[in-house]
Length: 228
Length: 228
DNA sequence: CGCGGCGTTGATCTCTGTCAATACTTGTGG
DNA sequence: CCACAAGTATTGACAGAGATCAACGCCGCG
Image 1 (tube, rainbow over the protein chains, first blue to last red):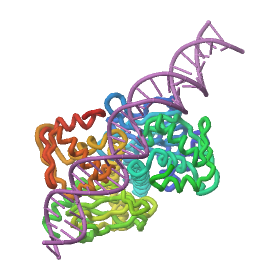
Image 2 (image 1 turned 90 degrees about the vertical axis):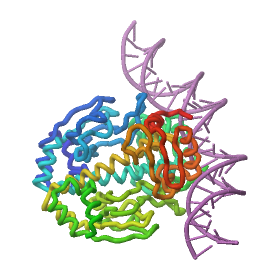
Image 3 (image 1 turned 180 degrees about the vertical axis):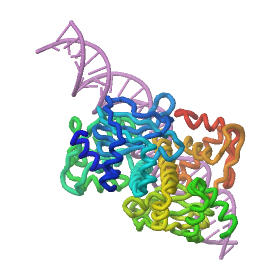
Image 4 (image 1 turned 60 degrees about the vertical axis):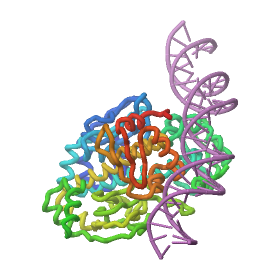
């Protein structure tokens, strides 16, 4: 295995908590594959017999609606796992996944995982933690959709990529703005206009990256309902 | 244990899949308690050391925002479990739970559950299935918030309480409309007006219950974007 | 009987979606 | 190396959905 791939893997939340030898045995049962931008990883309704880890690139998880409309539910970056829980429910993926940039994706077979859990039940805790993490993410997204305006959701999105809690910061936007807009539940036009409003709060956007003058200011803006 | 309580329990999705003797041992380690309307079950930020099952009544799960605003994320009915996954993550509940009607709630200790999983790893599959189910619910809610109008979300909400796919049906609304409105991401005023619009589609609402003239019609309405 | 919670209705305003036109970016082939 | 095309992003004008503020009706309960 490539050294950098191994580095990503041991950093991944799902794996870093479990014992090294278990991790090693799990990782032996993976298959790695490169995906082109726009390539499908699985489709809503496919039989759910595996889960995945992003080694490189970005993946969008989305629901399909009639007339070809897509609703983006989540975007996963390197080091993140997705679709871990779906295997344990009905047996079908409830959403589709697609690479939004060139990506390298690791695939873990469901039956192997099931056997591994039976042998090492501690692994179940890691899986439950991963599912719990995704639940929390979705709950936060729902809160934002219900309670925040478009500019506030963008501010929240930018802030999530940052560790700092005050001062200046730079955020890289590694994929199209239309995708971010969809993820945030708005149209590209609204995204554009909302970004313009954020300029007044010290957010400068230029080709693929945003410069935030004062993170603290954005945090404050995020929580309040009626601001210009 | 009361006979009806036992009946609810064995019907609960989390428990009906696991072996009877394991179920029995789990159920012995429960504690049952009655809650008044409006009584808190746990608070966002509390140490997450148990999960719950609704034996009777309704429970809302919500996020707190400043200025006392609440965002309802889910409403659980008898037979449903909640907060199963939170225990396996950071150790704190990411949302608050409160009885919205008089309710009887069973509490299952986290440490007992952990030990049970280590002894009977099959239990982990049931827990993962439950988490997966909640994930699916939240994904669907996100899709609805992003893609459906207020009347469509109400239609979806009504339809979810129904098994039939065509013909007439009756839906009981066992709690306040303001709560449903919040759960659906709209204000009570908008809920009221949106219901009025649904009247044109054969939905008659009268004090706590809705009569749907043709379920098929509502289903069709649910999927389409621009309708009067 | 009167009070308080709940629900509806009305008038108005703001935000976001829609439709359309125009830049900007990137890659491709001559 | 340039020109063009296709994809991506911004901007403008407008319309519609939902929020807000306020008033009123309904109903259960003390």
